Length: 234
Ligand code: CTP
Ligand code: MG
Image (tube, rainbow, N blue to C red; front, top):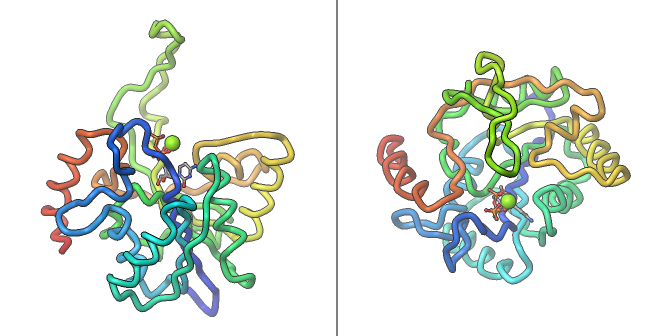
């Protein structure tokens, strides 16, 4: 399936974690014995589809991340680069730093540690077929549109909703061009698939799982320790 394609994974971890509100940035909070950021990096290292990893972080955290990676004794090629002001800018920094002959690029939030049982092969296969693929889960909640005064304006049809996660996977060239196009139009999105939507490229959703949470607020740390046990991650 992988053929001789070069597959790179970008892990973005240059955010400030304002919603978490802790002194230490959420991606570096210790979950049991390891900082959150190492969980997904370890999984990408174990996965045979992935040829190299680019970790994107803030300038002030680069040397700390280098030490973390070194201490972990990881075998795969891991490059650490500086990110930008928005997630989108950070992904772009990663895109400029992967091997120039990358065919497929995965983009992942460093704040999502639990990618253990996700079928990355399936995601990559769909990225080859569609140009763009993402993990997602059906929405359990009813989602509504509100105004700034918290008054409901509209109720969306739940059966049509999917909660989008990462990793997402793309044909490298398509994602690069989609970022360039977004920059030209001054558009900033909260994930990468929206940039492909805007270039009329359809994204295929691969069913993920509900354990793949994004650590965002303090209570997520409680959920995270339960999920870690459940998935038997050491
Ligand atoms: N991210 C990044 N560069 C930024 C902003 C975000 O690399 N300038 C990364 C975060 O580190 C995180 C992922 O993008 O792994 C998803 O972003 P989010 O959950 O919003 O994290 P933060 O932006 O750090 O949190 P908040 O929005 O609460 O400030
Ligand atoms: Mg953010």
